[in-house]
Image (cartoon, rainbow, N blue to C red; front, side, top):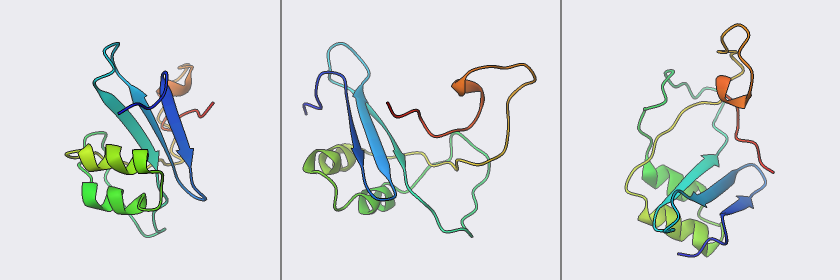
Length: 105
């Protein structure tokens, strides 16, 4: 699948997905998504909790065919909450120290 020279971003009204290659051979992709959840949705704090890939695919049903193709090829996924909690160490700097949505540029 060709996603462009380095990465591709798609936005919806309330969600987005960023897809990019992870190696020079361009034979492996990584993607990150942002999908709203109901206010009552609760998750444990974890970077390794498994998500439901069928639920993920359903969340992007109306998106571009390339997005749907990537999600169809995905065997499983992880799911975690983006919260307002501040988990930075005292004096830590940079985006990687806190939970936050990825910078979209």
